Image 1: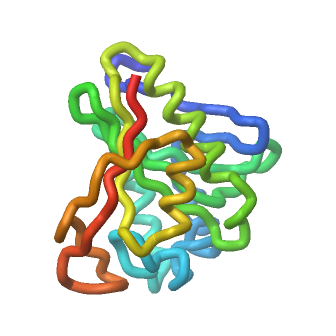
Image 2 (image 1 turned 30 degrees about the vertical axis):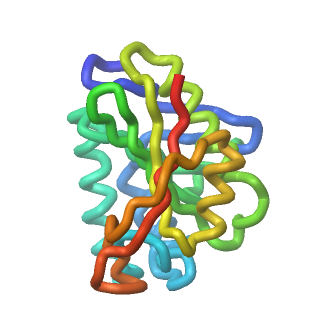
Length: 181
């Protein structure tokens, strides 16, 4: 791990691998979920209309890894290198804020809780990280279940907290979840 990195570049689970993003991931992400309206419904971005948008995004992810500003992991199967989702970790002091996305055809198989638990355990075992947190829209029952299955505890409701452009241009209420050591 380089000095600017506060998480390893790979995390392995029984069914998944979390790794650094690479330029070729853009086309797989575009096909797999980035243009899917249902996947994007509760995200902070609208479905991508072109591969160029995802190319730019992956370039930003690679730069973030190099600088250590944030660590956006690409999620793949254990024996495949095809991107099926992402798990983004952003550190602020002793806290890591996470966000996640998974291809719709893989929903309901417990994959995202598996990935989130693994990342959280690695983060909380690290020096100086005491809290991993995430927010989800109050209407996003599936994301709430991911967090609960990942042993996160609900801490409260944040009113007018987050703009989700696929739902409203006004800030919406979110639940705050966290796991601490």
